Image 1 (cartoon, each protein chain N blue to C red):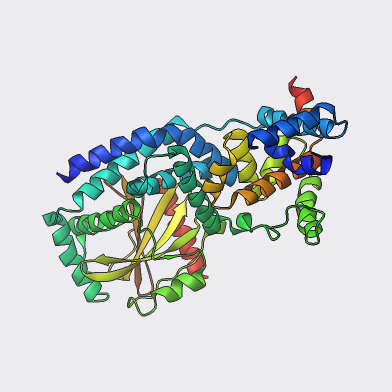
Image 2 (cartoon, rainbow over the protein chains, first blue to last red):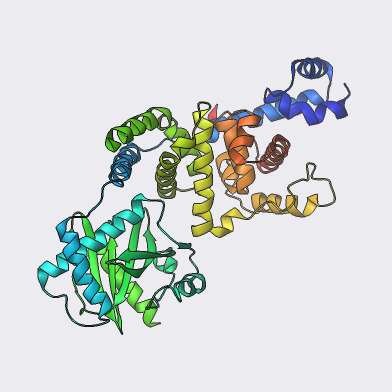
Length: 252
Length: 184
């Protein structure tokens, strides 16, 4: 073979990808060609350079155990899927929410116990969104995509603003069925954490503090006719920060 | 019982797929160029892989896993950093001397040469466009063959070869060769 036939095969030769007859032909040529030889050396030097200078990335131990934990949850959730019936608490919550959602603003949910019922229902919804393949119905960080998507699907029109600049990128939107009613959820991310913001007709004043339930944080606030419930497994302080920037940006 | 079946499925998944977690993380780390994002993507990819585990047939579990990790990386990047996933605009061009070549090759070259911090090969690799970067990482660092790379990245073997060639040419142009000297 001539040099012009050898050159296109050099890399495949060094990558060990040539068939035996071709490999032998290239090998013989390299032994006594003054031009292809140095080219081969240069390619070999590049390979050595890459392998020496590129860091070897390994999965952190914490990630490994986090994944094992998530797999256990996922397996448990899909084993449970065949079972019916949430507990009585969720049932009670669903009635309360049905009233709250249905009456569009009537102040019915008060007191700590009811708050817990709502919190439980929303945490369940948050969990379902993480475990299934159903985090978003509309995946987009563009408010002009997410907001119109809800039109006609729900009564309320959630203010879908992207907060990427503030460290909370908008991931998309989802419609959850809560107490038999479609409830829009805006989905945000905070690093590895998901923040679900459920938007209901306002029925409640501002909560002002962060609730902690079952290892999740919840905040509630009111803006005009809309009530917002944010649920996450991120730190409570981050959720407070989220509420702050969300309110600032939506007030525009 | 559903939970027994689920537990069996999970332990099989852990023994087939989790051994490739380091390889998965390394690919995600090269594609996202950031530890925290790589961890996010890998976790998401593993859950996705677990859900699709029924579609895994006996065979190369590493390629199967890396294919899912790569796909998850790209959809993550599209959501979070769309500028990172601009496709190569002259994909078929094998040789940079061709008609369409200079423009795109010029882009890559400008990218590599206009930054004086890019003396080290690892920085040069990070600066490559994603399709070239994943090809060179899978070949040189994961030490995979053309067929496996083609499977993982979903392109024909010929495209893998031309991407490797372009990646190597760009790296050689940008590299001053001192890396080896420094290390020796």
